[in-house]
Length: 189
Image 1: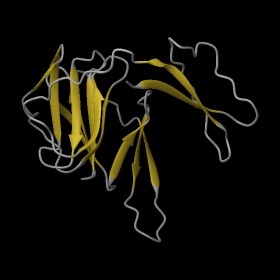
Image 2 (image 1 turned 90 degrees about the vertical axis):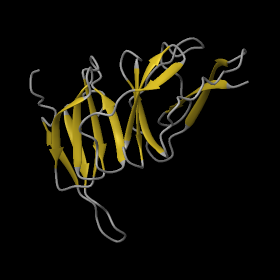
Image 3 (image 1 turned 30 degrees about the horizontal axis):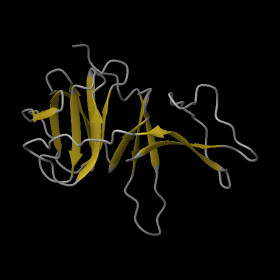
Image 4 (image 1 turned 45 degrees about the horizontal axis):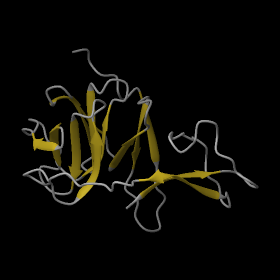
């Protein structure tokens, strides 16, 4: 038997959960956590019937780094360490089938995958080969590849208003973070 818990932090003293956080609902907090903030846990109920694992897909990716569900819960994209670096599954109930690889694949370890949050039209893949690949998610054709002289890319969910790239950091050196406004200025299709 497992239990679902909710974590919340707050700045000093007694911390109360905001309205709407109860045994049936999950609330969201977008506050910064600072040093010495108290942390609270709230039990969200028990999984009385237990949790059943679904069957593994026939093709499992090696060493998973990240994953993302499509906004309609149909597709699961998994970023991993070895070639092909991404695996995309289409779900049908509790069965997940690997779909054909996109024509344009990442060339190194995938560190981030993200569907566009408003409608899931686009899928962005960030990897350690200094690029972001953006796919049209209904056909998984690459529509744009953005390459910069930086190592790791990540995103600012859920707005998708800018991208963040961080240069490689080695011991004793200072890393540099670069913002790319309008990085998702995608062509109309």
